[in-house]
Image 1 (cartoon, rainbow, N blue to C red):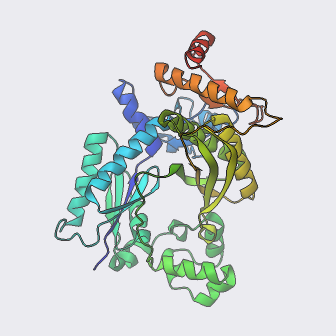
Image 2: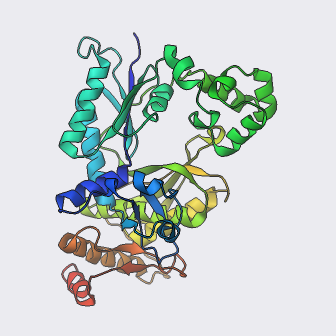
Image 3: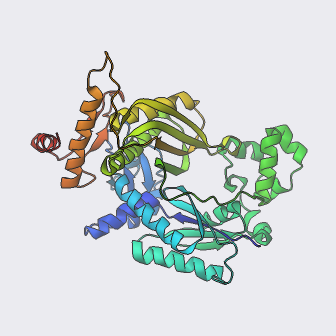
Length: 423
């Protein structure tokens, strides 16, 4: 049976999803103007999470400080991230993919693989099928996707990264010499900057050059494992399956991939904070507590692309945003070497329960319970004023252990009223 794999990737997901919400509120479409998704430019920890094509023209980069991006483009529109909206949009997009494909593997919040192998009688024309999925997402949800089609995951992903946005591309094995081999070697999936630089210094400039390089040369440069991996990918070989994951997970997780490597601790911590804000809010909304917290990361360099993760069993189950954030950043700091560029960063909370068990301790001061009560007060404000009205943050110049509620236009009276109604 011939394999048929689609890779479906949302174009500028965070920016697109925020734009859809703004259009529903009668505001401008961020995709058509110089705009970014990021935090307060006056805060040292605020970074660019996504950018529009007009903003890209100003050489604004994902992961750079928002203050730096604002200097490059004085008229830049800055919208805050809204991970509650992002998760809802992601679920709708994945739901449409599942309505077509017998096997769907969601690999991040904004992308998935669909396995259509053995469906030729139902879907004889795969291009027509891809176009139908593309249009359904665009017309019903208001944002666009790129779809790559091939016989394996590697080539489908490479195809979806061709010209954007709102495009469908094929990259079958017979098309590799024409469509993939002329590309710069840096365009090969999971080839990081250091690997690309080393290849180019050795006059291996295109993917085609790499595919035809003697194995012994690559082993000398990179070692056996990475040399073999590079040759397989340059020749479009990949037999990894599309995995079925149950829709009802036994925990909560959120993984984000980035256009460019994240290379500094502050940026990573800021991204982790946004992720924890969202997942902890979802847990409280669903009535769950976590007994274990973990971090997952992946480098852009294929040689260390294994799903590197670190987790910790908690002494007490909790849904506290502050406590979970402190836990995941500690785990991240223990795991990250401080210089490897990260292309993927995510968190997961497992051992979830609806039973709130408390570990009695002579040294307990009730601080965790107070944090949980504060979170519920902030949740009430979100329901009253919107999801962007209040979130946990850490101000510039303060350590992450001294976090405060960033209430923007919410008054002290509002906070006290919300708190008293949720005691």
